[in-house]
Image (tube, rainbow, N blue to C red):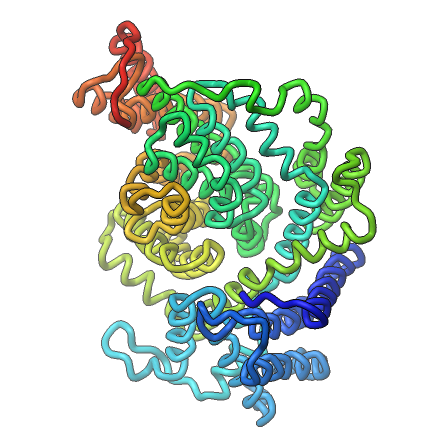
Length: 622
């Protein structure tokens, strides 16, 4: 990313600030019609990409070459035309009214600059996938066998991409233009008001002195911070630069320290209330209130973090690792005194659960964060700090916006060509009549997409391809979306391309693949829970009271079973056959039949009592 000084820096600051203020205005007073709002949003963001991001990494400089200024100007033209001729475009009858020459030229320009922007800011994988699906609309009828598509003319392809709300300007970009932008600004206010810093202090004060304290700090702070940031790698660098050296200092091996941070940071995107951008898209695609997604996500997220906390605790006990001294940590008394700084998050959760729209809830959260800052003389927000908070949030939108717009090309192609039906047919052919095998195939697709794409883009593509197949098999729509969402996220800790684990290993100074496989072990429940909620609605709290309570009990038992098995430790080390018993009991705890679930819970408790023995003072490797 280019770094500017002088007048250009000020112009960019004002440009981004104006964009943030515009989106705040529409959040308070109402957005424009969907197509127009999305058009304005993308037109505001696209030029930023060519000004701020060079044609290749490593060529950053403080000057913008002439060709990037040309691309920035070209990227504005399709949007300006769309805004000026908005009424004519919306009154068109798709596939009946002809595409005019200017519309065709501008549509081709939009496709070109969007793919180049995607390559620069998101990376080659999404740019290639979006380019393939754009080309498939035009060249698909030349493909062999099952891949053979229908024949569409270039004007029909451009019409789908540019002149409808099913291509670039579809639901994913709409989520970026509304919910995501406002929540990024909310995150900027949390940072500038000192609330984000307080999350770390709170985690340090209450977990730092426990055995393996720094690892627990990483888990708790990432659960709090990661939900807001919505980006695993950013969260690793945001909290890991502090927590990983502390973990190494008390004796955790470097690879394990990196693994803990990678797992904790990745899980932030499944932790309510915010859950990054993907959950907003999920609610929009399903046509349900966001609070329904939030409620469905809460138990799986708590099970995920509960298992990670237990494993780092067992790892500390197993290796005789102590916590930090109280003198090195913020005092609990001060942390409790400042607990009022949690009010914006608590208020946000309350508003979302009360039925407020996410945009209005986020705006109120922004106001609450500003009010909270007035009580802290070190973070009191005046006019300059308010503008800085808006700028800090808004400047992070390009990655999400461009990823959503590029994913929209895929969505439009799937809609126009019927590619989704072909994929459903392929899944049914490979899986036969075995729904569980279909789940494995969809999981693999989601993991592969997630390895090369941001979570948002990976989820959109996996949902467009995989969810129709799962729906046809009779699985619950919300659970199906959660399924692909989960695996798009945990691809961040799944080798061979575990981006969060690699980021953490760069801080820890550890071998990336070793860190990745350790992260997989710590995050084992994330690979199991999605299968559980596909068959048991209680896991996403959508069953009856009995089913929900049984799912909670089974989940808690499974945390202990998998924790003991993965760390090979209860109160002393356990053998391989004892670990196998715990793993089997853990799987039974997620079984959708109450009797078998009860047997699993009893087996976990019985195995614990039988295998725990007397604690021994051991120092062995993790």
